[in-house]
Image (tube, rainbow, N blue to C red):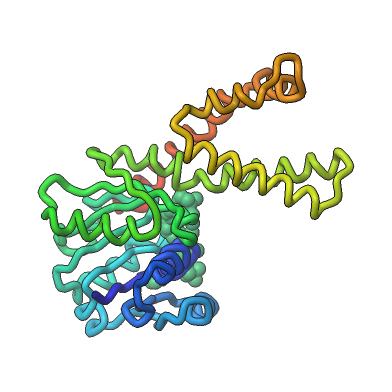
Length: 271
Ligand SMILES: NC(=O)C1=CN([C@@H]2O[C@H](COP(=O)(O)OP(=O)(O)OC[C@H]3O[C@@H](n4cnc5c(N)ncnc54)[C@H](OP(=O)(O)O)[C@@H]3O)[C@@H](O)[C@H]2O)C=CC1
Ligand SMILES: O=C(O)[C@@H]1CCC=N1
């Protein structure tokens, strides 16, 4: 089946890279993106064809259309598709933009799934939230699940509005983890380790802890307690995190992301 990506930026690259690594043929993927640099980069990295804009013939020949432009760009991008769309499934990965608005811009098209993936899709370790209208055919649900499931795990939410929370947790989440790695690395250098040592230790620790949490049947709190010897070094560090309100800070940060997702839908979707 031919897949057409509208927008070939960071998220599209992660999905395309993940799909190709897991057996999708590059010949089955076409990307439309006005940026020459993006097109060249995608073709060089993944061997996919890329065009500045999709024409009616390529839109009509695609079995699946993936919308991967920024929310701010979605109305214009979708408006250009509308006259040529041939009833195929459309999957949007955009934060905030609601299915009802996409449907309106697509001239009443109803075969729409919203997905909120994340960039670890590139290495097949993504996690994607999915939402679809209740009347979407089960074959379309299965197709969306197969595409996003090829690059990681999937989680359906019944209510589309829950995707704002999904975005705040797992869509944006990799950036929170990268920030923590950055901070741990910087702290390591301040403690006198060289930058290579700092990177190896910080990255290795986060990767190992994440793998252990994923493979363990025990909750993260139990795994944390197992590191924390009574009166030891971990307890000294965790006391600082708790005193600084790390848990509340995470709640505040994710609320801000969720709020922003709703705002993006209001700001760029309702027009
Ligand atoms: N990055 C992430 O981790 C995640 C992103 N998303 C969602 O994915 C979407 C894309 O995000 P991201 O990849 O980060 O953004 P990028 O800006 O990296 O990619 C968007 C691309 O679309 C291009 N574009 C703009 N207008 C059009 C058009 N009319 N037709 C085709 N392409 C067009 C842009 O070109 P130009 O730069 O020239 O405008 C750009 O290359 C967003 O809606 C975001 O919410 C979802 C989950 C995670
Ligand atoms: O930052 C953003 O808006 C997008 C959505 C989730 C991750 N990146």
